[in-house]
Image (tube, rainbow, N blue to C red):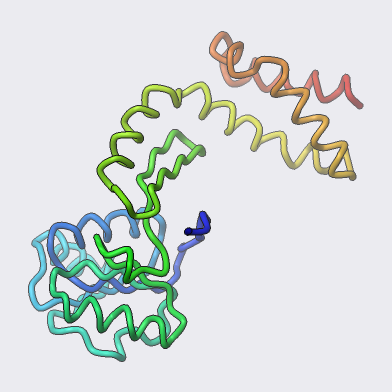
Length: 210
């Protein structure tokens, strides 16, 4: 059983072992998260060469060595070489470094879920490594459910959150405020308002509670 968690990778060192198509996808998602990515592989895709030339990643075109893992927060093993997979996973375990070995949940201390994003909302879907294909299919299904209005709602609540925390010192009070906003049917009525009108309506609700 895996514990679901979201990790802040902004400016954190991450190692990717491998340079093929899978590694390419992993690097793109890590860069989107703001990670400082180092790639180690004898052969790499052209896109990774481009990232290296633009200094978006550090690239070492050679075999993995143990010192590559020094100082990294986590490592993604995206190579097809079974011996290297085992070496990377074993070393990560000994160094207490989180490791994801692609398509090998038995060699993972964390797994990467199928991700669906709408603005500030992120859905992470996992089958605990049993079936990535099912996770991808579920992501497609939920894609029809997660709307832009839901993302607008999350953004709006983020705007008023500091105001609510300033005006209501207790956690129970703050929960009551946010429950009132959600119970107002905001996910339905926000589509009828522009952002300014929606914010005004939410602030009126907060004033009424005060």
